[in-house]
Image (cartoon, rainbow, N blue to C red):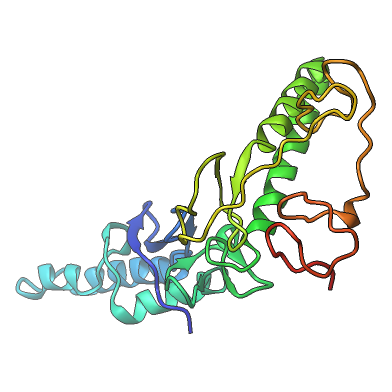
Length: 245
């Protein structure tokens, strides 16, 4: 059973209900008020009040006997549990950080929140690709395709000048010796130069200095972590990353 996250009780005039919040993004999930119960109690209150209206002592007490749910801003423990059952299916408790999160922050495949998931890098890459696709669509609709291509090339060039942690994938400016997250030695970027003039090509397809086409080894023959040519090795000769299955 998932632990109940932070919540508050609200009432919009038809009865109290609960709003439960994701511990990470504060996304709201609302339960439904007991409208049927509110109407029944309202009718019951009117009936009891009418029957006992002529009794001087009990008249006021009868009016209060059935509480008007339209003005109630609290739930009993039993009522709160019932409201929690309405939305519990949308929440999951991370076994690492113990936070209760919504589907937007949950990796169902791994069984962890997206921040603690062993697939964190994969998820981040997928989210980045999705965001880039949306942005590209807007840019094309506004006639800004060339501008976006230029920005993408600049981002690719910048990414080649970052140090990377071979253990958890954290990136940092070139020259950073140790990972700021786990303390492991960082793998420094290797400058890719033009074979003809020696200029730094920064991931470009053609040398920006002399125009020479840059021939690269197939992706399967380079380390996915640092980009070093592996020549069919089982481990990267530069950073030690395991290659292949």
